[in-house]
Image (cartoon, rainbow, N blue to C red):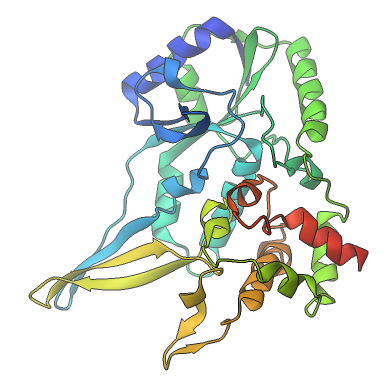
Length: 338
């Protein structure tokens, strides 16, 4: 169901959504943008370039309790509070789709999947390309599904494409919508084609489908040592990435050594202790081994699991890396040239 509303009627609709729901929305933080609880529609910024942190943090929390125990008694902690996530760019929608697949594999992760089931995702087409985005090179500049609502700004109005019943429940809160016509869909198609070109701030030479085969032959490529010699092993690339999903689990005991909580926290393969195991053995102790592993995860290991290239071209890792060595485009282009 495609609806359209005047630009001035979007904020009253968002206010109506806020009145009856817990809403997380994209907002300005100085000259940057990030997700935070949304208190009024006027604070929502759908013209943002890129969020500082990926929306995955509302599904795979940076730190969360998995269960609480007392002696031999254990009780899982599962969060199911409904919420609306408002303002998710297409490449981050793709990232959430990939995480859905990964957390449903083998032993489904009830904690992640419960939050996904409780959420309503309102996606928005990109209005302002960020400095390092290359989603257009990967085919992730726009999406046609995998969200509940897709909002696209046209000339003085918004096309609101309702994808699910949960999305319809939100649009039913306002009378400011009318039915979209073929001219609106035509304008959106033009917007999508424009974004395919605009979201290519770095030009990836190989096709994403070729990168797994290229990596098969690149294990000893000199680029791993060349880039890694400048790496601080800070893990910023992992923590800003919308598709990284590694975590550590620890049991935290109370003073009586009977009661406690099992806690999950984000972890990252670029951090030195990540591959540390019993006996103080580290099977990826060198920086170049960790650096190489990150690119193999994105370009080969995860694609072998779910059939999708595990980098969505958001460019966050490029932006946050203080050593300027985290650009996937540079790495994969160099491998292709070799």
